Image (tube, rainbow, N blue to C red):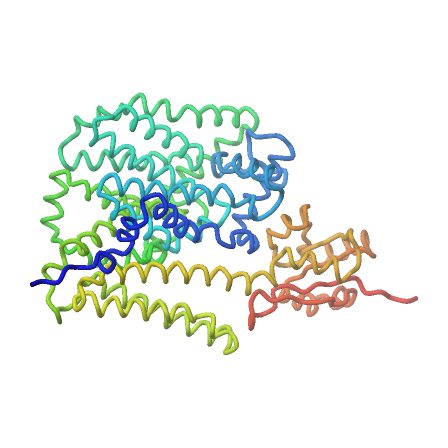
Amino acid sequence: MAQARCPFVTNPIIWVYDAFGPGLVVIAFIAVCLSTVWMSLADHPLHSDSERRHAAISIEMRETGIWTVPYSEDEPNLTKPPLSYWLEATSLGLWGDSEFAVRFPSAVAASLTIVVLGAAGWRIGGRSLGFLAAGGLSTMPLHVVMSRMALTDSLQSLFWFSTLIAGFLALTESDQHRWRILMWTAVALGLLSTGPVAWIPVGVLLAWLGCSGRWSQAQSLRLGTGLVLSALPLMVWAAGSLYRYPQSGAAWYQETIGRITHTADHAQPFWYLLPAFLGGLFPATAMMISGFNTSWRNAWRRLRAGDPTCLWWLAVALPLVMFSLVSGNMPGQLLPLAPPLALLTAMVLLRWLQGGSHDAKPGDRPPEIVATFFVTVLAITVAGCTIAYGFLGADHAWLAAPLVALAAVAGWLWWVWNRRPKRRGVGLTAVWLTLVACWWWGFEVEDFLVMPASAGELIADVHSRTGRDRLHVLTFGRADATLTFYNNEVLPRASNADELLLALERYPDVLIVLADPIDFRNLILSHPHVANRFDLVTSYRALPRIALRWIVLRPRITHG
């Protein structure tokens, strides 16, 4: 007589769901998923020029009350529509000037994306699909990193996927009116966040209908009315911007046509986004490389038949090709591909969990989806240990410990996949929880390594060492844009010896120079009489065993 399966080892999340009730389990599951977004959100400094720019624009918008045209250091910044700046300025007004306040809208958008994806998976494929999709998205590096930065990418991802899922439900369910309204609302908000790229998911929906010969169903989306109404908020803002700043049109032309003609900033080769796609959307990309197991003929047949799964494939493939062919794109723009890819991966995993175990025999080779995942994790572990030991030194080798645990758990999943089919659910849950724990550990490591050399700590330390509350701080060489945020005012920059001497004459007693070590060394070689006018107060490194990031100089006191 066959032994009955234990529900816990088949799918522990569902077992807990049945044992303790839906409310408690869903809340606990969502809390763990969202922990990769919110944990230690305010404990690390602003990272990049982009974050600094968002912070500076939002602060200036709040202080000046000019909400029409975003300004940065008295110059209009029109690379993006204003919704993200509006939300960040409002958040700064609620929470004060802090990293948490600047990042709050992005974190909320990323959290809503996880919830919307989980609910969508649950609706179209059951609770297991919802759990697997949301859990997978919560550990994707691109999603985690971008959700914790004050950028527009998380808003774009939320509105992009909301457009896709609402449009899909409007085409496949009877309550078309409600889903149609939600779809075009998401498009309108997306246009106010990132501009015309918000129409791309609508194009994906139309491509899916066109490939299956169902153009007539597009009428249910009310394309003409929807396109016009969704564009109205953006058009009203654009008209106000043109009235206040007539040069807005040139900036928008460069951001749209310039990208297509490869004359925009950040021009990169066509393959530039591929490494970011493979690494940033891990583990889904590692699993999907060989996990779908279908022929091109069968895939085309399914696409022609209107298989819903093909919609999510198109939602990944078409934007990836489009962004690769257009110049001026950054890795963060791949973030909208994460939710549909997480949904696809969840579908494959669910198929293996529900049907694959019946066909497996002890000793059979594990499917490529598991083997590829394990090999990728093992490679990441080796790379992480090498960096921690060789780059940071033996004293910091312990930083890679969670990666070793992840490799061990992934290896155990690979070993039991066909030998112990009943434990697949336990293995996947263990891998997911270990991935989440690795992110928690990574956040603490980030604080440990980055905070001591952050711009905020630097400014506070300079004030402490000099004993003055009011200093005139000048930068020479490298321009760290986050210094302005932490100093509560724009830091002037000297680009040559004459400007440095001029600043010294104006502020002989209260001048502090934050200098790039390489640039200051070149100054010593070329203008020793200028360099001899300053004394070294202290220096800062970006990371252990890394070259000096800043040196702090103060005018030398001379006695006549």
